[in-house]
Image (cartoon, one colour):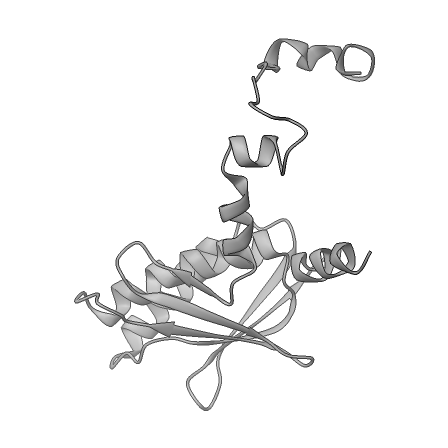
Length: 162
């Protein structure tokens, strides 16, 4: 099929010997993709430094909470790392709409502005339109993301209903 429809990709195909291709998920098990997919369906993501983010989708908006966990770094450092992961999670989960981020509290305006700049950079390469609106009166970071296709969770839900 590749020879016919995409001959330039033939050299990139690497044959894989699967122990029992008729059993279970075959290629998914071989590359251990099932655990990666399961992580995407969890309402949280673990940060490398020990903190985590909790992602809660509702009908009206998505709320994201940043937690420090065992990380002893400054709140700004943790928030910047969380911002990078939030941008990544929103892209791979294909989430959109109104998004509120409850970042760790920072004392100075300089730190809050640095976090907004970091988030702006994190979303710069997002193929969807992202508007970073800044801080709300409650100190939450408000943004909106326009997606073009259904979110990952809805795609899995429709597959599971079949």
